[in-house]
Length: 176
Image (cartoon, rainbow, N blue to C red; front, side, top):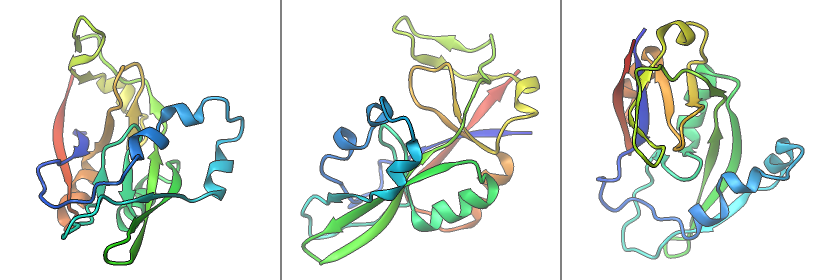
């Protein structure tokens, strides 16, 4: 099976820019919360930077990834174990509000010993362990990496490419 790192394509022009997203919706908000499902009861709202044109992309890279409603539905079909937190983006100029979702996939230990790390502990080259990946979720967060890396399997990657999602890049992940 092939695997792909899914990440935000920040080269897309005029994409939405939520104000305070990385400050208010990050991994630290989960520290000290005994029941993460309580977060699902509250919709977090963010205003968008005031611009003449706002392109609503389907994937935003944040401390936790944020996905559009449409992308959430597709990912949840492939991997029902993903936990989603509702997030609303408000464009006061056009008086528009869109529902997005903070995505928290299961962490999975899949880093191969052949992976290379920088001196500061970040991954220089990710290589996944083929044996461990045999029992992996279809969408996962790589555990053991300092940075957040989301991986999808080939079926999910192909489904992403068959649809007209905006703001998503895929990079093939090496395996041993």
